[in-house]
Amino acid sequence: MAVAADVHVIDHPLVQHKLTLLRRKETSTNSFRRLLSELSMLLAYEVTRDMPMHEVDIETPLEPMRSRLIDGKKTVFVSILRAGAGILDGMLQVIPGARIAHIGLYRDPKTLVAVEYYFKVPADMDGRDAIVVDPMLATGNSAVAAVDRIKETRPRSIRFVCLLAAPEGLAHFRAAHPDVPVYTAAIDRQLDAQGYILPGLGDAGDRLFGTK
Ligand code: URA
Image (cartoon, rainbow, N blue to C red; front, side, top):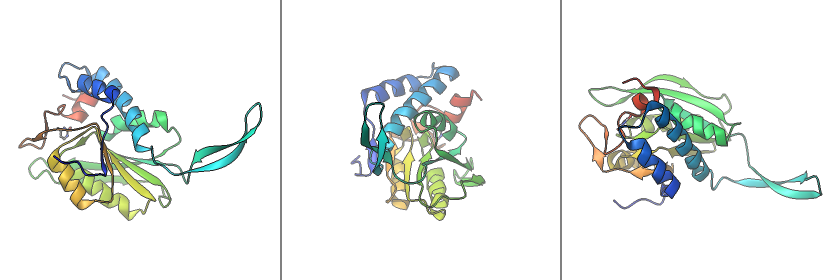
């Protein structure tokens, strides 16, 4: 498929190597968690690449200098429960001062529609850069619903980060939110009838938390 300008596939060798290890069915819960955290650090690096900066005066032990800091209020990570927690962990290692929002959405198993059961964001979202995280952009229903809700809080910018995207979910998300850039490690082949990504990595939440 042709990839839109605002869809960033992070084709770095380290990312692709770790993703291969993560996808394997033999990968243990422990290794899955560690690899997802490492991948998230690398994705955090890419998603923050074009953040606006400003100069400040500082002093090194040797002399004064002008140096740069990221502009504006602290970034807010928006974790889509429950698998978003796996990405959050790695991203927080790179941006430890970030604020955190949680959106609880489950997929109705029959309709695959996203149903909200939890929503908690920092009170002062305006002026913040929101990075919405969920490992799997499958049907796109949860991602679209999460970004709908985050837009209501009026952050300065919104970006969406996942590990794997299905072409169907990506098309759905881009149609609903063409203004929100997507960062992913891979775009897989298709969805199956149950809404799983093929070849994918299985159920990200179950693999992360060892619940199956
Ligand atoms: N959610 C998952 O955890 N895996 C998929 O393949 C699709 C949605």
